[in-house]
Length: 334
Ligand code: PMV
Image (cartoon, rainbow, N blue to C red; front, side, top):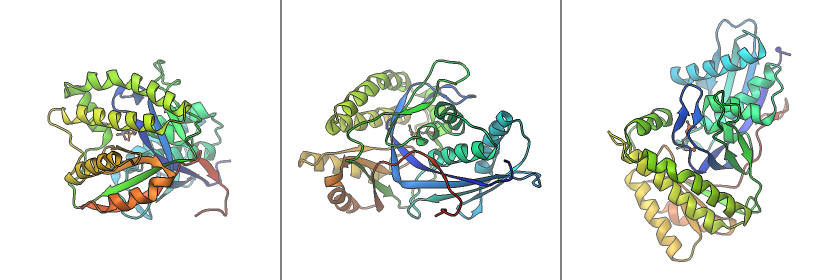
């Protein structure tokens, strides 16, 4: 079983109700639930081969040697898989992000989801969906959501061992029609703080952290009701409000964590102006300057054209909802 290389593909996701804060940093357990949309346009493919001839793990990312930090996180994750499978064999890992070039989008969600699926199958483990999602969570919190397609709910869980902190899909009639217009903000922004450090810094120093956490459960309920009623306007309103609350808590940390660039703010104003003109569009932002806009399929192209005119936007990607992570049959690699 260990002789075979296994390739898995997973899509990135964007949270509509954000994950920002942990109840247990060692096990990477979230302080609250979150809810996301998996994106078809942002795919990672990862191949894992446990090879008895290797003396150390080898990790190639996008055709080159991975940075030391990324390699260390990959080995730490593979150690979890090896522990479960009762093996010590080192692995060759090759990962390719099929993201539009130079988008600067974070890929840890799709990356750890694809790694979790490929590595467990390559190690001969047969994990069910919850167990695989809980495992991926230990690589990156948002990766737990990238194993499933469409709208996905991450459960915070209550167990100390984290076995009930996993993600499940949320069926909704909105899934076919929803689009995300991803506005990439470039222009020489300084290096951003990684979400892991920024989250713990917010928890430790922001006077708004408790206020942020206290609004998450209500926002999740609102989002679930919107999905059940296929009400994009209600989903959009809670999406934009929740992102602003998360960023407010980070901005209030001491020293402040400010992911927004001037172009980010210009895009927020542009989305509001388009909405005032009758377009159904709502913005969300993550641990970087990019702005992702939730909308109907019918409006996506017009929104992309309008928003790409904002100075500082370097590219715009339109994505529909993505599907579950899957094993790529040999001979079908992209
Ligand atoms: O999964 P992480 O550790 O990369 O954190 C994700 C943080 C946000 O993208 C800002 C929010 C989210 O829920 O995806």
